[in-house]
Image 1 (tube, helix red, strand yellow):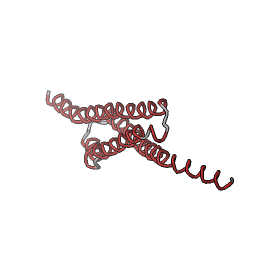
Image 2 (tube, helix red, strand yellow; image 1 turned 90 degrees about the vertical axis):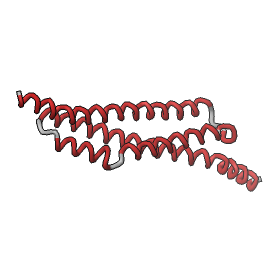
Image 3 (tube, rainbow, N blue to C red; image 1 turned 90 degrees about the horizontal axis):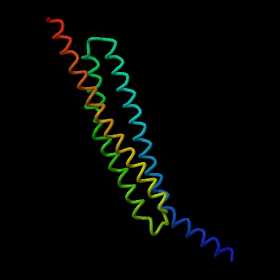
Length: 146
C-alpha cells in the first residue's frame, strides 16, 4: 500500500515536472527582459537629463550608440522575446496533458503581450532619444551661425 502510494505520487510529480520547468524558463526569460528594459529606461532617462544640461551631445550620442547599437541591444531583446513566446506557446500546447487551466493560460498571454507592447514602446523611445541627440546639435549650430 505504501509503495503504491509512493509510486502514484512519483508519477504525479513526473507528470507535472515538464510544465513546472516551462514555467520556470518563462519566468527566467521574463525577468531578464524586465531587467534589460529597466536598465535601458534608466539609460534613456539619464541621456535626456544630460541633454538638458549640456550643449555638446556627441559624447551622449556615442554612449547611446554604444548601449543600443554596438552592444546589440535590439537583437538580444528580440532573441529573448522569441524565447518568451516559445515558452508561452509550449505552455499553451501542454494544457491538455498538464491540466493548465484557462486562467493560467490567459495570464501567460497577458504577460507576453504586456512585454511585447513595452518592447514596441521602448523601441520608439530609443529612436526618439537618438533623433533628439542628432537633431539638437544641428539646431544649435544653425542658431550660432545666425
